[in-house]
Length: 227
Ligand SMILES: [Zn+2]
Image (cartoon, rainbow, N blue to C red):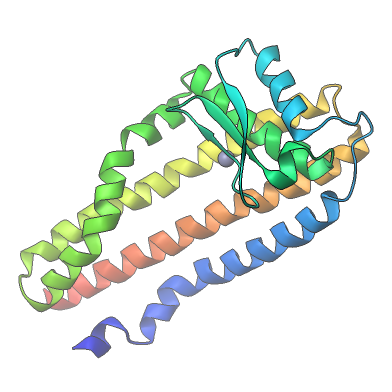
């Protein structure tokens, strides 16, 4: 029975996402290594550029804080805190500015009640529930009580929808970041680095979505076989 769940054709479904994730990770690493060594000409730090962007957009109630780790940068809408990691916060690198500006993009989206972000935040509880319970329901559906299979697949579909909604939110944050930085903050040459860093990061979200879609298709095909 175990073999049915862990057999090789599972690979066909998740391999595209897995390979793209590997590719995206290596792109992020090479670009981050490269552009975290290139200093911007204005000598701005991640923190100073974040504060400049937020205040420039009339956002005064978002705090810029430091967070441990590498590539752990994020905007927390519940606390209204923009957290920048150690390699970004005090850094004057092109990479740091690109990442800080991207996180500001999320704070601006939140401030403007950007529709895709609002929708994504609405489905967070359902998506969390789905990712926790879907595998359990599908396993029970496969081996014991078949009706739970369809419920598990439906729950997993919500997490796929969440991943799908992440794409426009992430692309929009990067689009805003690039527009702001290109408008008098960085030179055209410096913008090349920002461009590369942000597109590599976007690729990881595409990879997660592909993996989730592959897993969903796999579950659907398992469900069909049982019918
Ligand atoms: Zn983001």
